[in-house]
Each structure stands twice: as C-alpha cells, then as structure tokens.
Length: 393
Image (cartoon, rainbow, N blue to C red):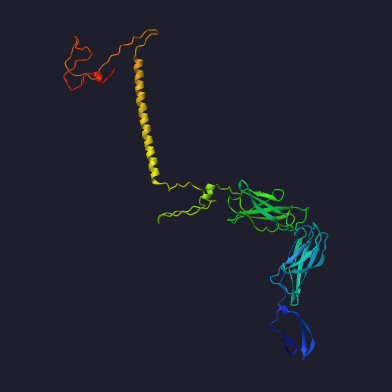
C-alpha cells in the first residue's frame, strides 16, 4: 500500500519481483501509469576468465555471480586488441546470462593461431548502479584450453596382476583432426593419497599401467593439451576406478574362510586380528589343532626305527667279524705248489662233553683210545678240564 506524504511516495516491503507497471488514482479517478523497477543493490564486481576449447572456436569470456542478477542487469565486454604492428583496436561484444549455467558469457572472435595481445573488461549495470571488472590481458594462442578426455575406462589385463589398461577418447569439443592432443595420466591406489603422474608416450588412445598394486582398487584421472604445448592443460577428468586382474581361486580355496579369525578358548589367550594383505609378509603358522596321540605315535615310530637300525648294525658287525676270522685262518695254511694234491684229513669227532668215569683203556702215553686226556678228579657230571669244550677245532 502506498502512502502519499507531500511530494514523496513511500513503498514498504518491496522485492525485485514487485517490479512492473502501476496505475495511480486521484479521487477514484485514474491519474496515470507508473513503471516501477525494484533493485536490491548495484551488481557485484565481476571477475572474468577467458578460454577457447579448440583452435577454431571463438574465445569465451565468462563470469559466474554469487546470486542471480535482476532481469534489468545488462552486461558488455570491452575489448582492446594490440596487434604486432602497433596501436590497438577497441570493440564491444554483447554478453548474455544463462540461467542453466548461472553465468554471463561473451564470445570474442580471435583468428586461428593469432599471437596478438588482448585486454578484456566486463561491464555490468542495473537501475541501482554499475560495476566493471579489472582488465584481463592474454595472448591469442595462450587461452587455448581443451576439455578433459572423455569416455575413460580402466580394465584389468588377463594374467598380469599388476597391470591396468586405460582407454579414452578426445573431448567432443575438440572437433578437429588437424590439431592433435597430448595426454597426461595420474593414478593412485584407493587407500593412498599420493598420485603417480606421467606423460603418455604411447600412440593412440590407450596405455597400460604396469606398476599397480595387486588386488587393490585404483583411481585414475587424465588431462589434455595441444600436442606442441600451445595453450594450457585441461582440468583433470573425473575419477575413474579399476582393479588389476586376480587369479581365480580353486574350489578348495573358496571353501576356506576369507579372513583369519581367532578361536578364543581361554580368557588369557591372545586374539589374532586380520592383517593387511599388501604391507604384511605371510609367515607359516604351525597348526596347533593336531591331537596329542599323533605326536606319541610319531615319537614311538622314531624310537622303534632307531632300535631296529642298531640291531641291524650289530648283526652285520658280528657277521663281518666271523667272515674276517675265517679268511685269516684260510690265509694261514701253507701254500701249495700248483698241481700238488692236497690230501683230505679224515674227520675227527671230538665229543664236547666227556662223561666222567674209570678209563676203559689207556695207552702208554696216558691217552685213551678215544683221544681224550685223562680226567682228573670228578667235578660234576661234565669234564670241565677238556679244552675242546671251550675251544672247538
């Protein structure tokens, strides 16, 4: 509601949306039409940036305000061109606000491979005031900045647990085959914060990472620049993830538990936690689940084997001793000349045990007809004086 105070019209609680045409009445009769524009404040100071996506496109200068401008805001780009022959050529280019992009955008025509210098200033104005940006100077070839590579994919390489294959395409805005791009790649394990960066040397649009971490997911990004270094590098592409090839597990491995778990049987027993498979070296762990009788059977078998070996050694030692004695007796016989007949001695039967009793017959030398020595006094049922009992021939 408007309140007329002398020559002043005061309106309360207005917003930028209240702008428009208003009718005035005096004594219930129309007195005129008034166009009202509502502005909160003059526009904020703009800060522009200029670039072009390929060598044939126009240079784009844009600015993104923090808040949406009023419909009455106007913008223009003031340009000064300083060619190599000297002097400058001023010009103006219109700028439009794009609600989807929330930015003011201006198109500046610059010839291909132009190496002259430009100075651009963005000017804004509304009903509450006007603002201008600081002058931005650049060279025609310097503002070339392509978009990041597109359609990036990261796949595993069969049979190589530390390889990753990276494939990509040129950005759609680089719609030229005359100018080519060079690429830079950076990657890291998902659990790491440090990137490994290197320039792609392979021709085409694919390369292989050969030092990835086994069994870990990796983050890969890429950026592009004109092949001869003209202009700037593009921003890094969005992150793409991939995991190297892993050898398929057998049925026995898949049936085993995936992680080490502790079987807690006593309160004082230590708990075994799962460890990191990358930074930890696996050590053989003794199986403590074997029953006690198994150790007893193994120990008994070992003792039995040792005793058996000792018995065999002693048996062969006795046999070797007898054989050596026999060979020594044989070698002690007198040698004979070749062809000489060796008479065979008649076998002599010598009783090992002689009965004790009166001699049946003795010769003059005191030896009986049986070839036995005369027995002395009786010492029992056997003749222990007979040496043949202890020393057989």
